[in-house]
Length: 183
Image 1 (cartoon, rainbow, N blue to C red):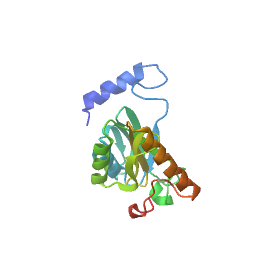
Image 2 (cartoon, rainbow, N blue to C red; image 1 turned 90 degrees about the vertical axis):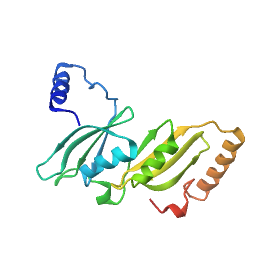
Image 3 (cartoon, one colour; image 1 turned 30 degrees about the vertical axis):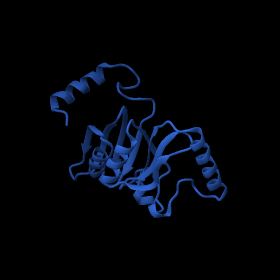
């Protein structure tokens, strides 16, 4: 956690910087609605190596605003409050967004996230488009895909493409394995 002196220095720099996009941000920043914001911060730190940049909490412990850095990307999150126009995936039973993480060692990040409590919804394996890719569901209802580019023989890529096309033809999602549940 930054010290109060570091926070004040960062705040002062933000106020002095006239650029329309704050330093360290890209054009798009995900903002997650959750139930259990403080627990979500801890999960993302443990699962994805997120670094906490900022947090504002109500006196009763609800997260007003959290700011995390995962790799080179900022992610915001907050608890859902009454009369909010957003909802946590856990309250509606699904989410319409998947967050994707590219990493240099997808197996290590995958193992870390699963150990932290993420559930596998699509196993991590080499895919026909040349990435090692899998899909997870976090304890707060958000879907995450993790991948890295890999070298694959053309024959393997073509065989996996045919397998995926056959799954789509059967109206199935490629890579779906019933033993991983219907996440």
